[in-house]
Amino acid sequence: MNKLKRYVIFLIGLFVNSLGVSLITKASLGTSPISSIPYVLSLSFPFTLGNFTIFFSIFLILLQLLILRKNFKLEHVLQIPVSIIFGYFIDLTMLLFAWVNPQVYIMKIIYLLIGCLILGFGVYMEVLADVVMLPGESFVRAIVLTWKTNFGTTKICFDVSMSVIAAILSFVFTGRLNGVREGTIIAALLVGFIARVAGKKLAFVKPMLFPEEYAGENAESTDKVQADSKSVHAAQRNVILIGRQFGSGGHDIGKALAEKLGYAFYDQEIIEMTAGTTGYTPEFIQKNEEMMTSSFLYDLVNQMYMYAQADEEAPKDKIYEAESKVVKELAEKGNCVIVGRCSDYVLRDNRNCLRVFFSAPMENRMKRVMERRHLSEKDARQKIQKEDKWRADNYRYYTGRIWGAAGNFDLTVNTALGEDYIEMCIREAMKR
Image 1: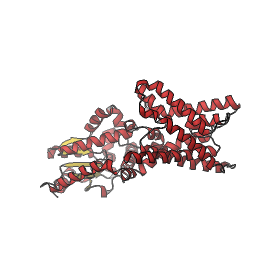
Image 2: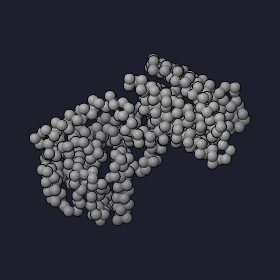
Image 3: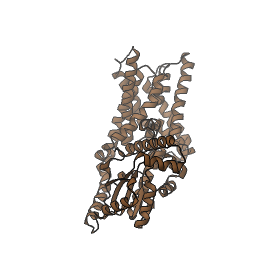
Image 4: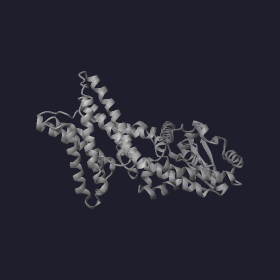
């Protein structure tokens, strides 16, 4: 039943995809990169866009066969009927949009953007179904598997290559650039971005559609909560999670507290453990964790990973998932202090955790940063503001919460009050 449901969602997504491709094409500002070659050929030969989409898809499947060879599996053959259905869907939707013929440029842009929105949602539905990849994305995956390239970079190269080849074919057959325009670039930037954002905003949909897959996980979580509540020491908090403003002394205070309590302390150690599971260097992880300049730009830059599978996530996403797993494993051991890594959110359902957020007046933080980093007063202030913004954006992106909000923590403490006071507050909170 689950499999049938997935294929129904996939077919609906395929039709939505064809609606998007057709509307983008009818906007007359070019078409999506993957459709650019079939579209240019359809302008010069007596075959439809859908026909050339089928021909081109089969060509990509044959290339996959040559690239993968013995690794070419039966599931790849499913791309053939999918491509045929998709081609006929495109011809059908081109007929449905026969009335769309915008003459004013602003109307062309509007139709283009609506088409990108529809196509992006169609891609999201295909990813949600997770049964078959379209030949374009599967071709990219074949290259990645064979030559161990980065999925995101390979996808970009593939899209650019399709557009360039389409432009060359246009000049060869018509003597001018036709079928590849600004709309091609806009579609390349927006479609994956829309699909990625939809995947985040509609994350609740998958458990609703496929509850069977989450039943075991939910049951295990429920059993753990019930076991905790029955424990004699259920109220005792043996894991302390620390969120902190930059320059508030969260690391030093957390480490000193762990030593006094006889707890293990984890901060930089989490980076080392994450490096061991992701293949990234500790330096790369330290540079990319807990930092985000703009969630919009991040999704825009990494939108091509929407087409990838779970083991081919964007590096920063992969780091977050790996660090979250490490944090959960450390918490299971108990009696420890964990600094940062959105741990208050990652362990939000763990009853054995005390969540603390450290803040401090700007003057105190500036003094600390100036001494530690050997910075001027002006540079220290800018460093603090920049780091806090990066942490806030990173936290909001991965948790959907406001960074430092009191409602996310059991205690919010001003570190300027001193370590003795903080220790007293935490010890008392642990008792309660």
